[in-house]
Image (cartoon, rainbow, N blue to C red):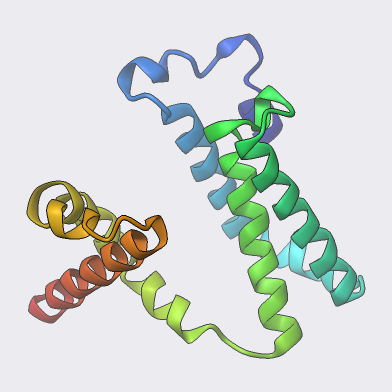
Length: 163
């Protein structure tokens, strides 16, 4: 079913594009997330039978390849937003493998993950409405991202405090 959703034969998901551009890609990402949540333990059993360094290497190469194909036209199904669902999936798997290899938890990512919904809900207000000039005054995309993440995380922490 996921393969059918991803390659979308006959443009089954095309009507969703009228509701919101990009919704079909978001739906595939959502479906992949559900698939991983439901079948994660089964996948874990199979991956534990293979050398961890090999699994990490394969996932890292696939992630880098998908990131390359996202920005450079190689195949239309992986170009631009179309490749995002698989890129996110393999990026997540690569990070999990890295944590297992180094035997460390990424506590910073765990903390940000706990606030991710609030960050998602507030980041637009931060960079479009409230602090637009301040956020874009840094001119560097990486600095803009860091400032936006920090301010959104701060708003999230304040919201959680009042909850």
